[in-house]
Length: 469
Ligand code: FAD
Ligand code: NAI
Image 1 (tube, protein in one colour):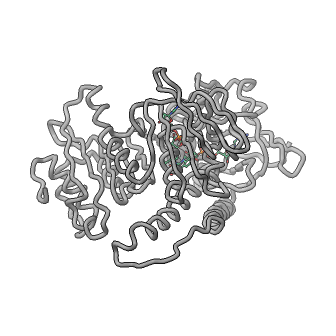
Image 2 (cartoon, rainbow, N blue to C red; image 1 turned 45 degrees about the vertical axis):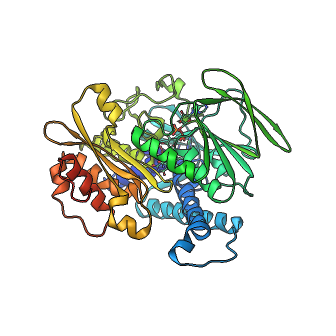
Image 3 (cartoon, protein in one colour; image 1 turned 90 degrees about the horizontal axis):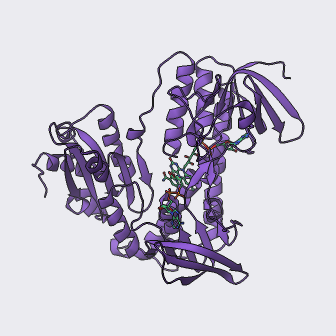
């Protein structure tokens, strides 16, 4: 047993865990953070948000140089891909950011343990240290922030070479000739876009009859059109029933979702992107009495306490959107509540952004959700083709869609497909937080020429007085 006793031991150093550690230290707690990875930052920094965004950005530059520069009067010859250099840049971005988390934990005097944690009992964390030996740490509270892992399909083995999860798809050493992606969700579209821009033929097999389930239907339809034009070949209402791997490639059996004639696709690499599940292996939850739901998520109350007093959980391993910023909000709310303050996260106001080109972003209710709950609403749209900044940059695909309440035009949701959609959406996120109406958005001065004017015009359109359409 260690000499030192902690107020809080956080298991997991991802966006949930490291943010919880920093905030708890700021609030005066003695904190330790345990992660079994050599580098902090969890899935997000090591094999998720950051490396994918680095590759999305680099591949977009490559596609611009090859396909769009000429239209801007930029004559480029001999544009070639140096995949090793692109991957090297991605790794440097990851390394710099993960080192940054070490610095932040040091600065806040959070003790860092590199090893696998388990919970022998409430008030104790056992760490099998990565460089040998183990230590038992006494603590008043434990916070589980162990994140999630990719799921697969029955009978499909991920080898991270020919059949890859997002982790393998972020580190391919050559551009596959034909990449088959299973799942037209966020990972499928982002990583499908990366490899398509770098020269792969990409086929995306999706079980449902539309892409990006959960996003507003107008946006998902438009996304399918735009990404289809960019070269992604969508096989909707289809399921993969078997994969046969050989040294020459992977034979992918595809059938209509409701059954029917099977078809074979020959792929070099298959990316399985059918969702993620909570990761809690090795914690010893059953023995200590922490309950999980049927999908493996830890059941928590409003204060993020699990079924065992003194043991809390946040981030991807608890219900809610599996997003880094949601994980961080959970962490802050949990730790501040633990310190006697108030904390709450409204999952209806968590923005979601897909970093394709153009970006796709949404917050609040979708039109389908409003219809299903019977809320009277008005919908209005403003296309980027009528926005002067988008005209100037040549990024006119897409629109801003706003959903407002019938009676007071209160903003209920915003959905954007277009240039910088993720950043533009933030105005609506703040608006939702403050209970803004379309009138509030429309009367806010927006700089000209700016993509943000499309948000203002969509709000004006909801009031029946758009100026530029
Ligand atoms: P994690 O980041 O998964 O961290 C959990 C940590 O716990 C890990 O480091 C793990 O090693 C550690 N751990 C687990 N068990 C133990 C144990 N027993 N002992 C010690 N340590 C343990 N989200 C966004 O918001 N925006 C994006 O653009 C985005 N892009 C993504 C792209 C990809 C390819 C993927 C896969 C995910 C992406 N996500 C994105 C989702 C985001 O990565 C997760 O929502 C986020 O990382 C969840 O944070 P977390 O702290 O809950 O868990
Ligand atoms: P997802 O849930 O976004 O998409 C999975 C897709 O696979 C769905 O469209 C689903 O209908 C489809 N599917 C499921 N079973 C299938 C089958 N048998 N055959 C064909 N299609 C099937 O999951 P994804 O893309 O794996 O991402 C996991 C998580 O990571 C998401 O929850 C997301 O929030 C997070 N993430 C977030 C990003 C971002 O914020 N930009 C980027 C990448 C991941």
